[in-house]
Length: 326
Image 1: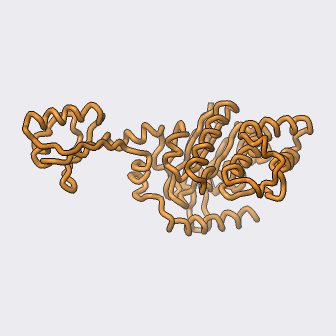
Image 2: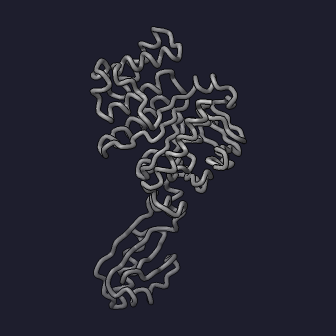
Image 3: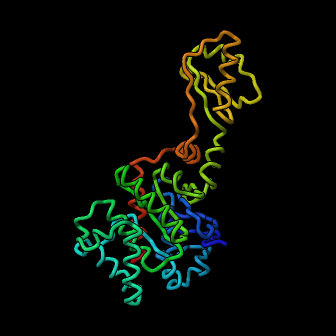
């Protein structure tokens, strides 16, 4: 059963189309990733689904509720924004208490849930410390805990590990996985870290210029690149002239090396070495490169994620903030 159904969703800011006729279904319990360059439309889509923005066109259904049913949707979702939103003059427990009161949770349920979510993100020992004393990773975990306070069915995580060190980021991944399994949550994740999406997500959608340009499991998307690439250094010209097997999808001489594309690099390497041996062809080194999700991203978007795109994202943020205030 689908937790989210989107049909021809469109959002325009004056002459700029941030989301362009997006259609998508996300299943209950799925951990789904939205990938894309800065300004591609990821945060705008989440803002619409969280009822923070109104679409210009199209429709969406979240947990069985339509976008005009704002209160019902908001009670059934949790959201962790990219920008920090904790009160650092309060303790961790007080931040959760405030959130529970905002959702009109009864006192006994609120107190029980605070203990549950603190335990879930491993913050019970720091619960009574001021948030301003927390590390970046601890703050992120508390924000995730806060998003879970009211038992949401869907959790939106917008760049949940942005700016964290690799070890802390890996720890957050484990907490997210744990939430998905223990809480039976549907999680929608936006990220710029390709390895994060590869590690966590059941499926990912790559978005560019407001459109979904690729959709599938990480493995499916990596397979769409055509296969593994074996780079052979040595008598590359000679090797290329004799590598005429059916299992060779492509061969290309590049920087003095023969790059051979095959379905399975592990099984192809012994065959290549055998062919080279029979022909007396010198092989100095063999390197196997499997396609990564970053390769897929660059292939479909035509570029890597660059810092200079941040200004475009900042401009879009200002437009979104301006619309929220209306």
